[in-house]
Length: 92
Image (cartoon, rainbow, N blue to C red):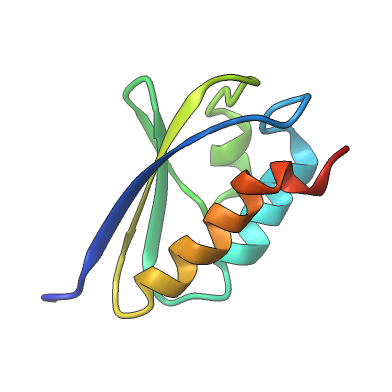
């Protein structure tokens, strides 16, 4: 597959980090797309389509997460995931 790959880094800025609710939002967003989407922190890389994987990534507030999307719809997927991080997973 010669599809495009997009890699971006995001800072976890919501108050409680990547806990159950933000992880569920990531899985829901990633599940809409055919591309492969991974999130990596400190050498641990998990699929954004795996709730259990996301719960183990230790996405504490202030941590930097690297997200990569590979596939034909990678840019759309990355835009939606970026929106979640930028909006602090819609938490106050």
